[in-house]
Each structure stands twice: as structure tokens, then as C-alpha cells.
Image (cartoon, rainbow, N blue to C red; front, side, top):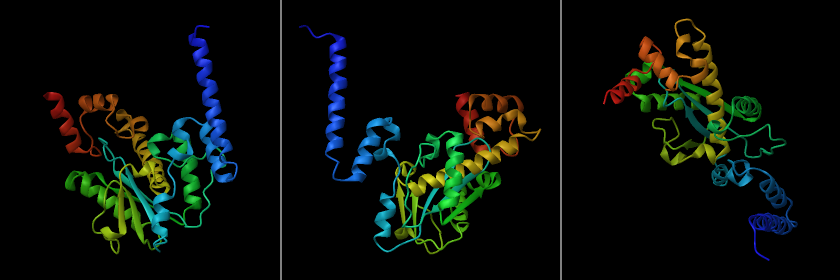
Length: 266
């Protein structure tokens, strides 16, 4: 009998189900593996357990004797307006992290919607043994440049954690001039906010803090026209139009805007 598109599709579905059942049955001796396999079988790829941040990097450091590990990340680095904000979070080595429902998700803040971030932010502040926010102002960004300003925000977030930190896990960058935490006590992880729960958590609390700040600033009459309640200071099309129409405010990053204007003139 000739094979039709319908029979091929049915065959692929059956084959997929058989593969999933086989993987599940091979995990029967391990409840943890069974839960992971079953969850991965029913969830979209981006939500699968194996693709979510975990404590792998933290466990490596905990195993060497360092107990208080801070995950560090920043938000707002590429904005046209507003400060750059850093977050730092510290979790206890014995924390039993379990997702009881899909409403709680600790992941790169850019992958979450505002409601998910708010839920995660509350959970992080409640369950972390230390957390801190650091802010570098517009004047610092304009005077020192975004790199040095971001480092200032990092150091403030670490200081504001309120605990003596042994080791840092950072998204992509090493942080200079941190008292007691030289490079040997740091690990820079590319795309760390998608791999480490501590870094992902830091990105979430920083994002929630900065979004609220920009929303409040955007309510002021002199800034309302820039639409910061929606764009949070990022260089969206509408934001760029308003800059072209009204010019920059004192809360804009002058170098960022100047570079944009120059690129448009070429």
C-alpha cells in the first residue's frame, strides 16, 4: 500500500511516543530521573528541565569548601536612558529547589514575562539568604562609560547582599576591585543567566527593580513623552522618534544617543 502524508505523520507520532515510553521505562529505578524524563516529555523545549538554569556551577564551588556563592547579573546595559542596575543573590547550599507549579520559573529574566518575573522576585527575596541591588547613575555612565559604571553597580550589589561572600558567579564578566574576591574567587560564565540559578535570580531581581524605577520616572510630566513605562529606556522605534522630536533629557545616556544619531546620518 502506498505511503501517504497522513500515514507518515501517524508513523512519526507513534515512533515518538514509543521513544518517550522507552526513556520513561528506563528511569523506573530512579524517581528523580523519572520525574525529569516525564516533565521533559510533556513540556515545550524551552521549559524542559535539562534546558533550565540549575545549581551545577554552585555545587562545583560548594564542593571545594566555599559556601556563600553570589550570582551576579545586570540589566539595562544597552539602554538609551536610565541607570544600569545589578543584582546579586546568595542561596544556601542545602536549599531544596523544587518547582511545584509552572507559575514559578527561575530563568534568564529576558525569557520571562512581567508576571513571571514578579512571582520569581518574591520567591527569591524570601528564599535567598542574601540579595542586593546596585545602581550606577546616568551621570556615572556619561562620565565613566558603561563598562566602568556597570562594574560600580556590580560592587554595590555585592556589598548590599548583607552577607560575607566567598565566591562570585557572574554572567560573562569578571569584576575588578571587589574586596576579598579576586579573580581566583570568581567565575565568568557566558550566558550564565541561562545556566546558573543564582545568576538567573540576580537578573530577575535587577530587572524587576529597574522596570519599576523606569515606570515611576516615566510618570513624570517632563519624561512621559518618551514612553519609559513601556520601553523602560531601551531604544525602541517610538523612543527614538521622541528623541528626534524633543531631544534628550538629563536621564538619557548621551554617548548612546550620539552614536545612534551618527549611525543614522551615515
